[in-house]
Length: 191
Length: 355
Image 1 (tube, one colour):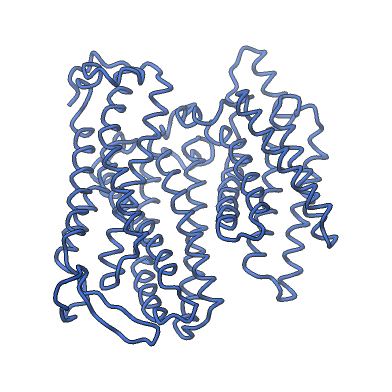
Image 2 (cartoon, chains in turn purple, yellow; image 1 turned 90 degrees about the horizontal axis):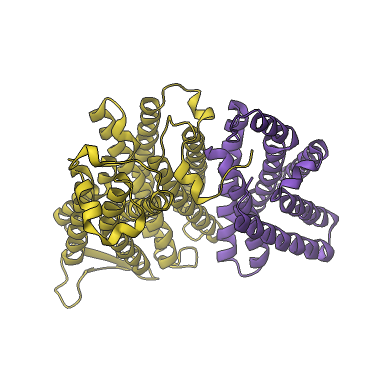
């Protein structure tokens, strides 16, 4: 997580914008599946806005983890359904997999930087220690893999935005979400 | 050689550290892209006309490397002498701290890029053109000259000179960075050179391929499809060898640099290495999909528009990811693999960590 004020405000504004965009798309959706997908991104964006500020640790971690875990499963099952029917284009596969990765990164952030970890850090700080936000081996390895996949997802969305005039705004929004999440995770990776 | 070791201070200079990091990334990226494009022009495109945008990319990458070389020398010297960036206008502050590896990095990168660029500008190649009726014509690269017979479709002698000059320039980053402190010194530097050159070929070759697809309008009924497929097969064959070299060299480097495998997950350097490795795997997966799935299809059915389009998209994704990988590699080269609280310079670019 970040504590520089300018970065907090920048990221918060980016995620407010992506949340608003998702609300608009969810309202305009013609199918339930697509509406749910945009709704999940709206919740994700709002949670990311909260994550920019210290009070985010007051939000219980378990419901967040369960919600985003279920969201990842939902995207994966959507992908699986289309795949079985033989209707999954390469673009659909990449996009759904990218959405699933974004949700898994949310689960990771809640687990690795959530209230439990924050309280440990505060205890360490109050005892005179200095906590650099270090991750354990499992959290470090899984986080690195997810951040790498998130970077790849961001690249895919950014290229999509550059090459396809139709849906450019949507792809740009997804790329912005990926970049914002990478910026949030990066300090934890490098500490 | 350092002028006077006693005078050196390693005081924290966050702004200088960040500037050095950025300059080093742009310098390395410029060198790798420049060298990669040169390798591709000489080894893959050979008798094909270089797409205009690719030539511009090569020139832009070369200029960025040339501009960043002196900047790197000065800012790195400032960092080593513990000065902040505002001392850049006072040569007395940084000149004594320049050691031979730093000076060589600047000089070789500028000389290599200039030589390779000049050779590519001056050499004459026999070029093959294919029109929409699949008729083949041959001309020289420079207009107004006699048409030459296509006697040698291989790599020309001047091309080899350009490749060596570009390879020398792309290899100099091994003189700086964390591998300087790793033993056995000679082995580490040799492996690092292999790693850099293989990476350069992959980056430049993928960019070249993406731009060839764009220039040739493949999949749109163009007669260029057959030749572009040939270029793709050429690149794919060399790329397979370079990817194997890249992965082996990277693995050996990681083994030599890290004290224990556990450091991969527990240090900042190790985690960034994992990020880079996963990104390389993503690019490798895309390349494998191209080589074993899409490429056989388009070489059999040259008018398969959907497959050409997919090939173009995947190659673009590969190229973009490779540029990201070069940036991540720049961060790795600047970081201390064993340092507790490592990558402070990297973290300074982003933000500080809240416990």
